Image (cartoon, rainbow, N blue to C red):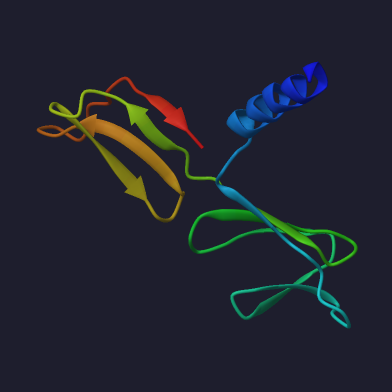
Length: 109
């Protein structure tokens, strides 16, 4: 019974520390790279997608992709807003009335 309890606690800790913004894709047979959104990427390559995912194509053709945008979570939502730059895949938290002024915030992702 103690072993089961220890396992459940360890699993709970693992789940809470994992990044939910990643996914893993098994390799396809007879493929010479990793296929993402209709585009074939070289084995052992890293690429960024248009939807701000950083993907790595392993030597065996498997692929791991993670969201790289880092979403702000804690900031004064009445005074500030999160603005996303699609070219850099970065959020900036700025004052609503003056976008040149940054606000303090915490990130997730």
